[in-house]
Image (cartoon, rainbow over all chains, first blue to last red; front, side):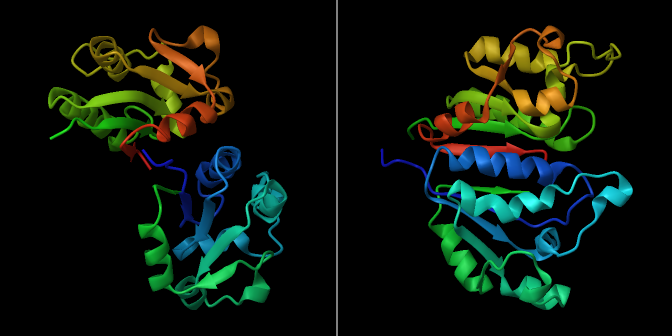
Length: 121
Length: 122
């Protein structure tokens, strides 16, 4: 069997609603130790994870989203953003604390067909 | 048709999320059809399945015991993400029979060897 190591993590929810995306970051870091073919894609409301100047300590929550800025230090460079998330949210790349590569929805769909496993958070 | 080898991931807690029960029904169905489950990995809120202290009324399904029975009958591991468990106070002494603490590395390692990963309880 060919190695099944193309993993893609889709982040489609906004932060702080639950601990799910905080734990997703742990999941992504663990996945990065197992494969070099890991990609992370922000779609739909996932774009809000990347908004600058978050201050969740004001509501006693940890600013875990800063971890997304550290992904390249763990060798995770394939970080993408759906351009329709920019349109829907009316945000600009400058509003975000990282600048992922922006892809069209069609390009993301194609990328997904190439994956062995897809996880969504 | 060749039997498939599955890993089932459960992200939802029992009694809190329908995905938790769907996971059991799916596992049961594929096993009855002759497929194989290598491992069921409970993560995020799914780790609550391993809590041996659930007081479940007699007229309700005891999901922890159902998973244990299935895993004994069909010989697959019931693994709990140790990081998620620690966050939720599911310590080693609280683990129900059949459930083991494990790292995500074991989950990803299993993914490399099976046909399908099905995730429930998002």
